[in-house]
Length: 84
Image 1: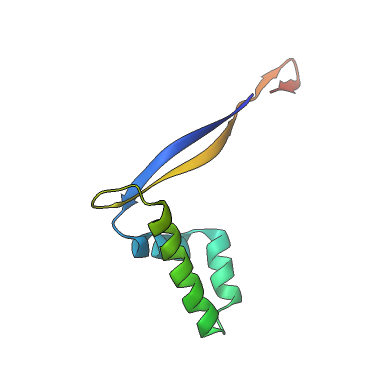
Image 2: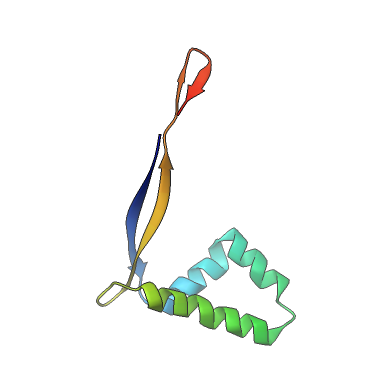
């Protein structure tokens, strides 16, 4: 069984803190920064774009709050077979 859900993420103090968090701790973002490390213009553009992403979806008042969608998939194992 699968269903879409949302979660409110509101622990970033600013769009720049959001950017810095993903720049330092999220594998795909880290890999992207490494791939463009020798191009200061592209690095600066990615910095701006990540902060702008947080600004665009910010729902907070006093902090950066965003509602993120995710897919919850539940499976159960019964008699050796997995059922969704």
